[in-house]
Image (tube, rainbow, N blue to C red; front, top):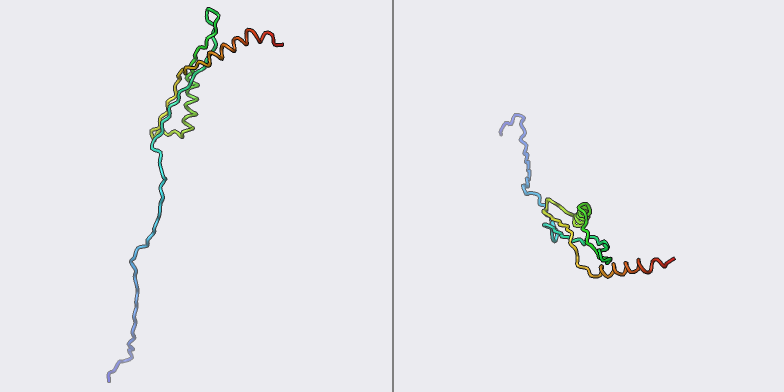
Length: 123
């Protein structure tokens, strides 16, 4: 036959499987049930009442509004309570407003009576 002159034929087979499938990640994210868009708070504060004696000797309660410093202190407390955020658009209003309180007048009359007629006789 054929003269192969020392050459030996060999058979080689390389098989490479390339899977180009992308890895898949499934993420289930639950959002909050509700989100706060904005918070508003309005607070009215009854001021202080001081007993004042008029020219007839009668004691009357006189309304004295809170100072700006006291109102600012209350506003700070309210802001901390509602987790105030200016960037979210929250608003807080704190104002003096005299409440109509008949009971204060009665209490001041009882207190005046006690101070004038009872207290002097207590040892």
